[in-house]
Image (spheres, one colour):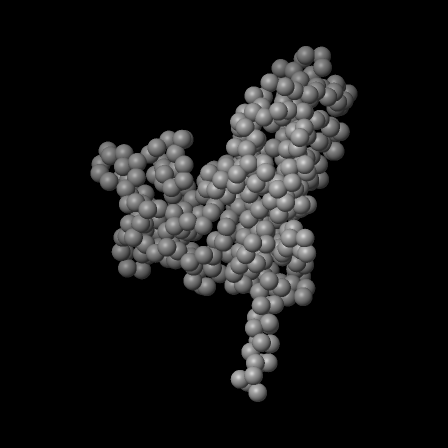
Length: 404
């Protein structure tokens, strides 16, 4: 399925986000000071994914995201107030579809699915966790003069004809898709944390149970298309190709290596610098099959400014060729300006780039404010999170006694 419409994620009472609503454009960037709450929105999306993929576990386990364990309900509830229900939601809208999926993790947990078009559906399933997927709610709808039953078990839908003549009805798949879009989007979201990437020079395929470094290495060693796509982008940024090469004829073990396109020098990836090693890991995560939303933590870390500029160009290209959308936390002025420059050059439109300023209010709660971008790539009022500290430092310098 193509994802051409508007995707929004909503959070309520999750960490420092008491109320948050964020549209995910092809490239959406959260900027702001350390501790402002940029990562909280990403963590909320990953917690939602965890529940969709495996609801049959204790509720506190949903906040173990693999790369970080946030604790239980008490630790992630805003202000540690467990009397306020945590809500995590995904919403999708286009010319044909308007549907939502919302998880309520309060004292009476529930899974809620809504469709406002092209038909009306509103189903709420009250559950307790661990939830073994044995309950369901049903609603009847009339579609093209036929009656259908929509059956919702919390994380998936079944659709049947009310007259039980469902074997060859093409509308069943279509009706299920309208309701399932938010579930599908949230369920395949991914997160790329800041890490070096690869710490060894030799790997072996470890199958679907592998995680982290071994998972990505196995994908690169087994998926030639992924290997080629990663190599293509790496060449555009660093003029180095990437490959996974078997250690011997017929061997299952393989090396991850780069080749300098100017000199022909071959280097094990583990011996490359932090930036190149990290970039290969990130590219593999964002280019692997099956994802739509990819959250990335500070992708510019350890990259030279020229490489950052080329990276923004490649991220934009990937949104168009690979049907990806990126939610990025960044504190790099150069990264943000490079994205704005793509708009100024006519390579991107303001609708493709979203810049949001994240800050804490007087109650220590996270507020997310979209920065309006015009067609010249300019932000109304300038880049607040970057310019304000510089202006304060300049004012202090000019007003210091030593300058008088």
